[in-house]
Length: 536
View: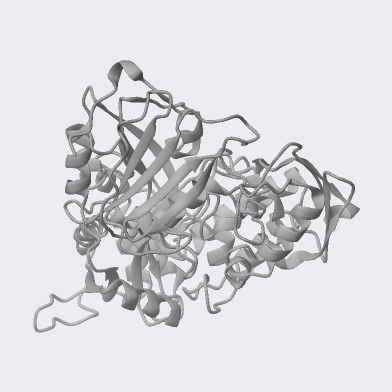
């Protein structure tokens, strides 16, 4: 579930689709403050790009398919936010999970981790002309801390007891206790009182027909070659694709795995990148039989993740067996993950008293060791295909998984209220430790930790990671946490997923291998030798 920059802060929340909705889940489960963690997009009509301007003022038109949920931090809102707003730090580029500089150039810990001193960038201007200074930054951060949705998604903000400007370009944060995850969570956007940001583009207009962004000529890293970005919502992927192939749009934000080869040609480049989301079936730890860690372990040994990735994701994914980002700098690669061992899964279920026929045959169901119902949001065909593959594999060990498809609003409500046995989601889990901390560290409460998972040792280790700034202690705690959550997994972990963006070859994309190309839009240039003429 969750959100660049962190939109749900950024992120749970991703995107799925139907035949043409294949990845609406990846967008949906990552950027919506549900929690604040499920990504979804918004619908609309059309904006006609200005194709009459000179080559020196190129316009980039982005098609956003199947965006049916509107919001500040989801879908089109997330795209706008990513291009116009910035925080003191960022985690988008640092795929090893470390926070890296943005509006703050560097920072140091003092007073045994109870004070964070940040040196701010000079020559930064907000879109309304306000000069970025320590006083302006302090006011902006205080406003951000005061927003309830930020408090839910960035729990480290609660550790800040005072925000003090010091000189022209230094900000001092006094903390109530050591808060090691705070730099990761200072990626939340800073704005002026009227909502203006410091990004390379500024918002000109936004309505149900989409949005218009214009380059900000005073951007501190340099002026972008792209004069304007037009964001157009589309009802379906197919209409977005056809517009791309006709040259009516220059980019489609999502391409499902099965369509990558179809879309890619001399005029369209497809950029793949690993997402910080993973598909998983989360169990309600407050209900039988999922109170038992043995049962949850058995389910994880029963699934062939490689086969699922090959069949459903067309090879675009990586097996997942736990909640921590496997590329995090402290991740212990020596910890052996779950393998595909169906016979061992059967042994575990037998030992838990769940033998063949434990659940008798029903009117339309075979006898089973156990039977459970898993919630699916309506219209998310990629999730449905994943669920079908998992259902087949669990059936082979005598487990009858049934899927209940409900409207997204009901799916969301039932998760928050704990009204489910299991639920299939696309959840943000990286690249920082702050993301899994949101879901698994605390006892059940309203909001992000909605699944009822309780493990005292996992909670202790998460708390240690939240407080310690010692790298040796962090590495040790991460390795121990990996082992604890293999012994007592809160979910059936399936696969880390990828996203693909289709971009017209009219643009030269600034490459950062493995990173989302949206993060470098301000560095793109127009390839004038391949410029196409729109047919609208």
